[in-house]
Image 1: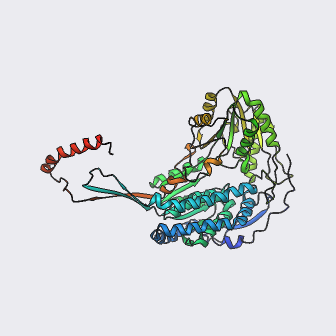
Image 2: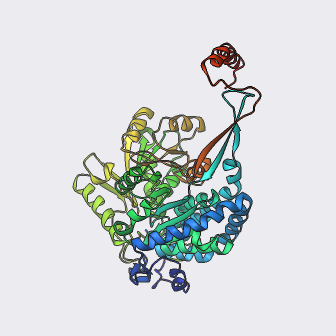
Length: 521
């Protein structure tokens, strides 16, 4: 693999101290944040307490009352201004994303573009989805029925470090569009990116108290964020998500949980091997595989397996690793020492139990402390750590299958069901196979970006990959309570005693039969 010269030091981010003041914190304590490219401290962040979380909720609730009453038109105008500010400030956002997470410029740009798209969609869709509507009454003419939507209040949003901008926007922005406030627990590693995102919205007109950011150890304040919420959004590991979901359920608080994935790709025997290999490489190694929807398992049909694997190895070995803050690199760095240790452990375990490295398989300390080469394994078998467990790094296992059915069964043989991919030379065939896969999203002739970027369509998982959906109308409807309002028209008095019911039975039975004959609901 080749690599450009490593940037010697992390860029200076002059707005760090100013942005850190936006964190709700009275503890006086700080925590250092390490830069993936250098392994040295980037900056320090204030640490929030459970009292800070409670205070953030109190202030957000007061701000939410006015925000909800301001109406759809006002919120739409503010969010559309935020959209423009995000695009105008993209270079600062890109620098910050790269510096905090270790990803490449191109993959950081995907986040900025996604955040802008989510903002635009929710600004324009909120009134249509949440504006209320007339529903058919069970007693036409006698009663009218309408559904309106009331904001739930203040959402608690807990986001991880790997995609701080995208994942924050996909939960925070629909909450704001629906008329809710937000208290967000940002992972320390991505907090600066989130604070920059928030600043754009504040400058666009979102009240500062409406969207509060707290930081600190999840074990210390995560429970307080969940306990104070009227609705909970969590993105992270399945183990932590189960605890968050159980806590929310104990108070009958709704929750959407996007959790882990062990995402499969099926390569059918009618593909162009070179094009398929290029798609697979991006699907597996974008952001160093530190993405919940990235591909970690590939099942390739035998007739094309040798050609595909040869091309896949060639493409992977040609990827350019580096830390440049421009578009000259293909692959960046893992984000932390913990991530490096996990990836190293999974690869070492696989090799010790008989797997073979086809590409990569080693750390690159010459480039930076957490760099690791994109790795292709064959011969992965049950019992290996990387077989069924999520690696969350640049490691993929390639297996050969003899038929579509075998590929489908293997792909579905997982406790997870977040994302899947099918590569085929035939759109019809690819779609047919896609419909058989057990996942919340399936991409045909793409790895994950098709569904991930489809902000008008729901995104989420099945099985141990979570519950609930973000994006689309479903993402907005999370943050409101539907209220059904019915009104008697007075055209005819409904029965209130036995004699009146006796006289009404015949007409009401006739009404039921007439509605069925007319195919009216």
